[in-house]
Amino acid sequence: MVDHAGFPGWERVLFHIDEAMSWETVRYLERSEPLRLLIRNLAAQGEAPAEVLEAIEEIAEILQEGQSDVKRVKSL
Image 1 (cartoon, helix red, strand yellow):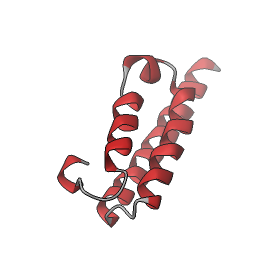
Image 2 (image 1 turned 90 degrees about the vertical axis):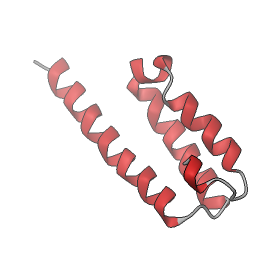
Image 3 (image 1 turned 180 degrees about the horizontal axis):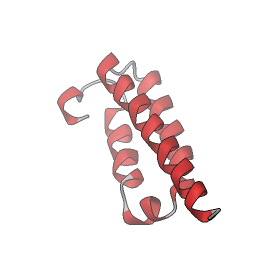
């Protein structure tokens, strides 16, 4: 993200990325999805480079896999 700083609103995107990586958020994965959507929307509104948007989507896929794994383990 920092490598692509400079698009409008990049500071807010970075702030929310830091928030999404905090222990409180990582500990409760259900908090991650709303933050991911906020980050994606801010990046899109600021016309972030394609690499940033692609990274956000890649993270979304990883997040979905993690949430599926947690649900599967809880059901055992």
